[in-house]
Amino acid sequence: MTPSVSVSSKPTLLSPWRRRVQWATSLLLLLLPWLEVGSTSLVRIDIPQLRLYLFGQILRIEELYLVLLFSLMLGLAFLLLTLVLGRVWCGWLCPQTTLSDLAESIGRKFGLQVKQNRLHGLFWRKMLLHLIYLLIAFVVAANLLWYFIEPRQFFIQLINFELHYVAAITLMSTTALIYLDLALVRRLMCSEFCPYGRFQTTLVDKATLTLLLPDSEQHRCIDCGSCLRVCPMEIDIRRGYQIECINCGRCLDACRQVMGRQNEPGLISYAFGTSGVGARGLLNPRVLLLGAATVVLLTLLLLALLDRPAASLQVSVSHAVATRQFADGRQGTFFNAWISNRSQMRASYILSARRSDSGEPLPLKGQVQFQLAPGENRRVDFVLLTPADQQVPIEFLLTDSDGLKLSNATAYIQATPKDVMHE
Ligand code: SF4
Ligand code: SF4
Image 1 (tube, rainbow, N blue to C red):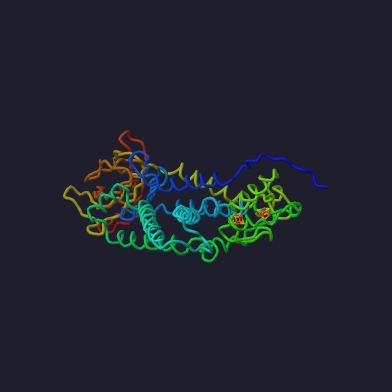
Image 2 (tube, rainbow, N blue to C red):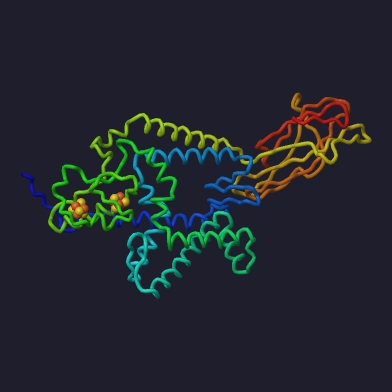
């Protein structure tokens, strides 16, 4: 005989928590481009300057290895999340699901019905809804552009019709695509087009988190169909695990509400694995290896960021004029230097040179003291004076105003004028 279970008439639901998570992630995506560290953006890709602002770091194109390391680490962390929590990303965090939920929820508030991914109801209500979809699509497209154009600048340029034509075309085409997504595609993206959904089938493990109606609870099912009606993917969870399930938990809530009215607990639950293996099944080689690789990459990335100098220096011989013999017998070699301020503050720098064999200082002619704005990369032209007819190994030094060495570069001056070799 089945023991009778008494539960409170108001079951605990997951939907309010899912909505809070969706609001939080949406607000985060909207607000991130507005946030700054010091006077620089928290996250922004500056295409004209070939710079990436990433959580207080200003990465230039030559430091792309850090971006690759970061992307690789994120990719592995994402795979790990899928292996452990299944499609929780899809149901709780993915912007596509949030937009689909928002589109359908506004549709229902307008008195429309959503059936098989289509809206049914009065024509004028549908028209009004499409205008709202267009507005949402514009905000989302603008939000995407704020990751490339500083938001205040974006609005100033937009109001004055001064947006660069590439930005204007991107804004219009992205708005159109998102509008079509909201109006027509919505859940089809998850079930038909999204590559992650397909890819996920290869990642599901015997202990991956999923929603299920356990065999031991089947006999309590009253076939009310509530779990099927609320499912955005139109899945019947009673038939067992299906790959289209996005782990949103709506069926769980629906069943809890139905069974709650009879003072019984819901039948559907989250579980690690469909065969009752439980969370201990996560201690398998795939999860452990992926977890270890993610931690290693994260450690490497943190070490690389900590080891990153506050400024960089690159020196090369000027292609326009290489060397010149001066009247006092000294040889002048013309150089170009690229100095990059990687910090978030305006900083003063001094460029100097010395023989790398004896440490003897060597004179430089040109601008060797300067200030750079945060993230600025500036070219400096100067002439290095060395004794004629001598081979001189050179070390260029970039120091801050207190004389602290920030970066260096080397070169080698050959004895013969007009023949300068740069290392
Ligand atoms: S089966 Fe349940 S958890 Fe899966 S998509 Fe449908 S409602 Fe969401
Ligand atoms: S909501 Fe619960 S009781 Fe109703 S059909 Fe689904 S599993 Fe059965």
